[in-house]
Image 1 (cartoon, rainbow, N blue to C red):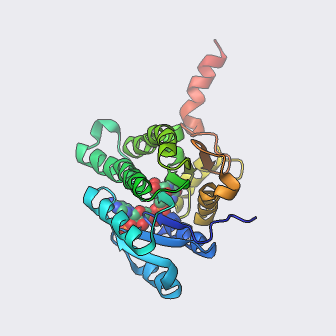
Image 2: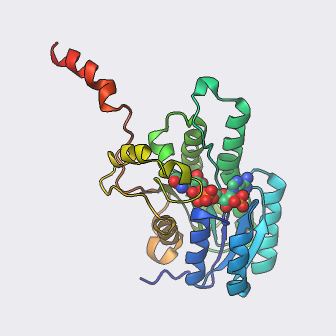
Length: 274
Ligand SMILES: NC(=O)c1ccc[n+]([C@@H]2O[C@H](COP(=O)([O-])OP(=O)(O)OC[C@H]3O[C@@H](n4cnc5c(N)ncnc54)[C@H](OP(=O)(O)O)[C@@H]3O)[C@@H](O)[C@H]2O)c1
């Protein structure tokens, strides 16, 4: 299928690893000019840069820092012109879950500032670029999570940061058309995906068997599964009439298993006899 992305300019945050890196590779295959931003690790992108130099720019930026994001877009535009597509992908999660009653406010603020404020700042400077560089088409893709759809016990910081993206999605799809009349905003919600972020959880058989109980396909995603959804939504040719939508890429996930069988057995026995 022809995506018609050739020669567009896409900016991807959190591009040094996992899903972001795969999105960059996918765009490059489609002939897109890519600005890839990383925060602390440049190694994988440096390898790509050697092979794709004229089409790829690599820039450091902490998405929770406004001046970094402003400079990221300024440099992207001066290197490659108008940014046509932005993917707000950068994100973090705490490896250890913690109940809300014990969650340090510093942890909450850190997760929200990278995941949600980072998406806001990416949207802010993407839209500013659309205002300064007029054009008809534009696409913003947010990377959410099934945690933002179903919640995630012990990770309320992370699930709230992802659920908050729905406010951005629903507001910005109506704002973008004032800057680019065919502009679109969508969100991709990955479920469990094999990346460094989820590596620890996905090496635990107990966690996986709980996840698979709600998941008809009984497998975790690869970063390519998520990147394909992002490329699809970025394309005006194949997704040009799709805006304000959430595309969940999670093997059909129904939700969460809350209790092990032995934790509900007693309640079931009592209530069956009532
Ligand atoms: N993997 C999953 O199961 C899963 C499920 C649902 C949603 N997601 C979402 O998918 C997105 C990508 O995650 P991933 O699994 O690919 O994780 P990953 O491999 O850990 O990659 C995370 C990326 O975010 C960047 N990043 C972290 N903090 C940043 C900051 N302050 N400023 C700029 N960039 C920053 C990292 O940059 P450096 O490495 O350069 O520091 C890295 O490029 C995230 O938004 C995540 O919440 C993942």
